[in-house]
Every structure is written in structure tokens, then in C-alpha cells.
Image: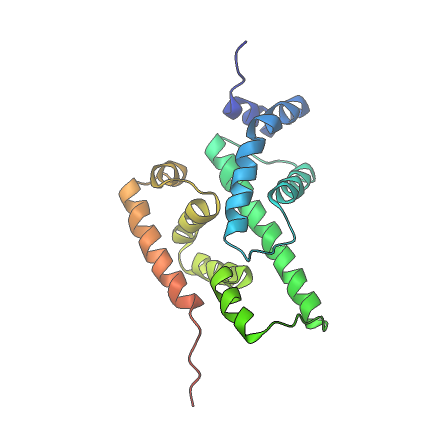
Length: 190
């Protein structure tokens, strides 16, 4: 039995063939879960969403939209990673709104040190910084999206963007340095 080509199925999905959607999803499901799990590892440890929930939410958002075009499997996974990032940011923003509503969790002074080691940079702050980078340099923002959120290699990112791996490497280093500077606490002027 010949295994169906994911890219061909994605292209058939793009042209509106509903049967292609049903055939391609089982083939890409584990890779989507891997991308979701990678993104969740970048967040705090006690996240209320799991990789499966993120993938299912992404699937629902895929279903609600028409006219997606998937010229390649890399395009599909890059878009899926972007969509999952949006889901996690939306979830974080709603969680932050709920926190401002007064529900405060008490922790001891000893637990503060542990929490600082366990938590990663705030996803909302990272998203805001990435949006700022996109306004300044869309290609560097795309490199971050593909490398950090989609988990693509330098070579895969280069193919996706139509540039050399060396260019991706330079842009990746510069984007990381810029984001690092943006995510550092700002000193208050006296």
C-alpha cells in the first residue's frame, strides 16, 4: 500500500477537497502534538492546557476558516505553529484578566525562588516583543516564529523563507539578541 503524500493531501485540502482533510490529519497529528508540546515547554510548568487540547483547538480554528493554501508541508506546520502560538497567547491573556479579578495565590518566600527557576519568560511579553520585531523586521520575526515556535531547523527555515541557511543563522542570532534586550526588565529612571 502506498502511503499518501502529505504535501499532495494538503494541496487537495487547499482546493477544497474535504476528503483530503480527513486523510491528512491523522498523518500530521503527532507532529502537531510535538509542536504544541514544544511551545508548552516554553511556558510555566503548571499550564492548564495540554498539547492535545492545543492541537484540538487549532483543528477547530482550521475548520472555521476557508481558503488556506498549503503549497508545502513546511508552510502547513509553520502556520500551525503560528496558530498554536495565538491560542496560547489568547489563553495567557484571558488568564491574566482573571488574575486581575482578585484571585491571588499565596506562596512562601522559599517558593518564590523555585518558581523563578521554573517559569519561562512571560508568553504575552514575548508575543508583544515579537509583534514589535515584526513591525521593524518581518523576516527576523518569521525566523523566530519558525525556529522557536515551529521547531524548524536552520535549513528548513531557509527553505521556508527562500533564503540561505547562513542568512537564517544571522537573522536568528540578531533576533534573539533583540528579543533578549526587549524582555529584560527596564530600569526605572529616578
